[in-house]
Amino acid sequence: MKILLSADDIQRRVAEMAQQIADDYRGQSVTIVGVLTGCLMFLADLVRHLDLPLRIGLLQASSYRGATTTPGLLRVQLELLPDLRGRHVLLLDDILDTGQTLAYLNRHLQTLDVASLRIAVLLRKEGRQQVPLHVDYRGFDIPDAFVVGYGLDYNDEYRHLPYVAVLNL
Ligand code: 5GP
Ligand code: MG
Image 1 (tube, rainbow, N blue to C red):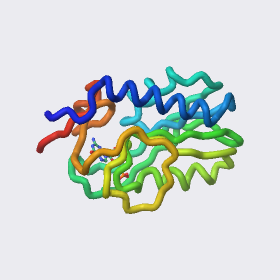
Image 2: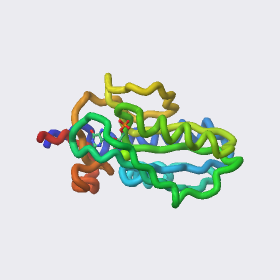
Image 3: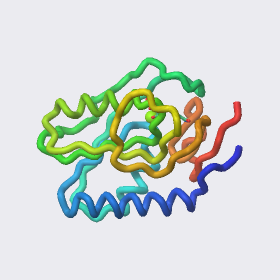
Image 4: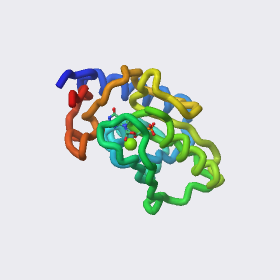
């Protein structure tokens, strides 16, 4: 597999993102809401750099489409989500592709009386967004290819890789 982002590239950028996030929230209490399962590595690495009063919440979203890059049917499970009323929420996902997932979650979280809502993604695929969405923090812009590693899977494999690679199918 062709490595697109090395483990070092990712670690350096995640630390930079954490610095920016910490500066923006300036000591305010924040609840990071991670989108399972892809957010795992990004979430775990990011929060260890964040010197802020911090809570972590999780939800699960999947669009069941294997390696095809056409958006599938979105399934969302919110059972693990804590009460977000009055909280500064930072919604965190691995990758922004069409935007369908994060746009839906953004709309849903807005209905929960949060104090503020921002969005962070590690990766954004260039030229793929179909749903208008403002993303506050993004790690890397990548070309339109199917990538795995650092949380991202193909049929639930490859998530554990410390780097991001292009999967040739
Ligand atoms: P969107 O709703 O923005 O189209 O897609 C978001 C979700 O699709 C991501 O959270 C991820 O689960 C999946 N996805 C999109 N592109 C890729 C990719 O290149 N590789 C992997 N493994 N998943 C992807
Ligand atoms: Mg995902």
